[in-house]
Length: 121
Image (cartoon, rainbow, N blue to C red; front, top):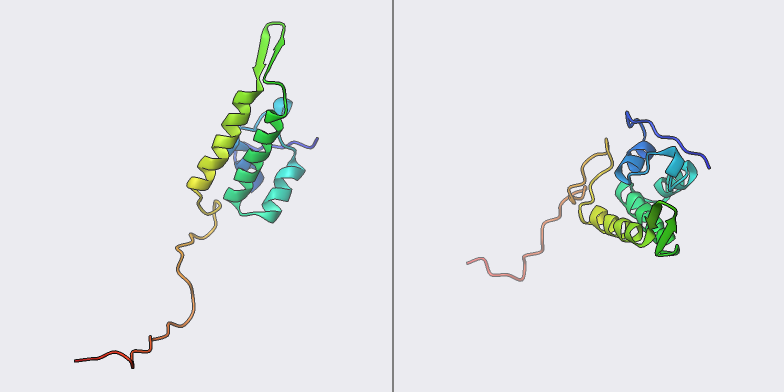
């Protein structure tokens, strides 16, 4: 599995890893190719949300609780965390870092409405 993370955040991949708390190579949830694939298909926020949902789905397939000697893993909590994170990301979606802000305004020539059927007096 290819993993890279630069804490100075020069790439969208690094920014996504930080946002999804996937910055440790020893416990990485995603490989670089998966993040790059999502960025190739979706906007920055949607790629983050899709990856969070993917992690939630992966953790939900695991046993609820695994006891390993002194360590106890609760995968269902992780599944809930990533599912909630995806919802949160979508609720506050914003442009990718460095991208222009989308205001919802369209470009082009404005056309005057046809007011011939209305009284002007």
